[in-house]
Amino acid sequence: MSTDLQPEPVDIHDDRPPASPGPVPTSPASAPAPEPAPAPRQHPVRRRVSVLVVVSSLVAGGVSGGVVAWLVGGDGTRTSAQAGTRFGGDAMTGLADVAARIRGSVVALNVSTTVPDGVGGTMTHKVAGTGFAFDRSGDIATNAHVVSGARSVSVTLPNGSRVAATVVASDPDADLAVVRMQGASLPPLGLATDLHPRVGDFVIAAGNALALEGTPTVTVGIISALGRTVSFSNGTTLSHLLQTDAAISSGDSGGPLLSASGAVIGITTAGASSSDEALAQNIGFGIPIARAAPILHRLATSTSD
Image (cartoon, rainbow, N blue to C red; front, top):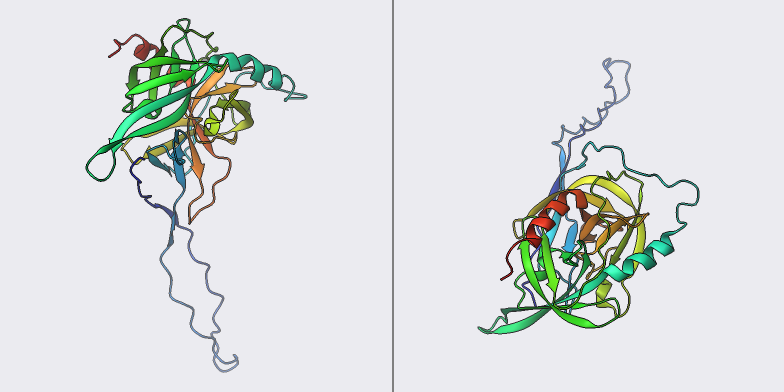
């Protein structure tokens, strides 16, 4: 199992001044008994709220990604260009067709690594994640944290068969990696690098949720916010992330986040989870494909180990 990383709190400052006390009588002769003196002015309240954000890969034997992240940056908003097509009328029409069409390009990743066993030896560590074909060569895009330290990688194809694969290259700072299958190729998904998503646009997430057997799990939501920043306990910070309320589960890391027309607008990387101090629901994050695509193409041309 991976090392259990402890959470770190995020301080949220409430800088609103305390309410002003009511008027104090100024005529002792005619005024009723004096009221107690108002409480002294208090300093702004500092509340400690922890929101756990876990990378969405699945570790055999338990839900973990080996890395814990914390949501940072108050509003995290950025100015964004207008998004592409808006979906009027029955916006859900055609989503089932999109889900069926993209399944042939989404795969489950099965990764084995070696980690310390805590008693001076090592043990095999298995991680499940998601990937998708993104170029004409059939290379697979995924998250770097899914394949970090991989000793072996295999890919479960849409037809259920499993093939060996290698990690071509990865960029941990961007949390992106490219995996190449041996003796197999899949049709690539279209990358919407010229589309600027807007808050409220419908999105589809597809992934290897909880490493369930069969076809990828597909969920639907909207873009909830743009320009989010997440800092991970391993020192990595990802910025300009898309936030979505589409359900994101362990095992979904590296999966595509798609527009309602089926074009990839992002790569799923993390989901928020409640802690003892704060409740988090329907908060997931994805790397915008406009930022990811140049990195993926660079990685794909790197020399494999």
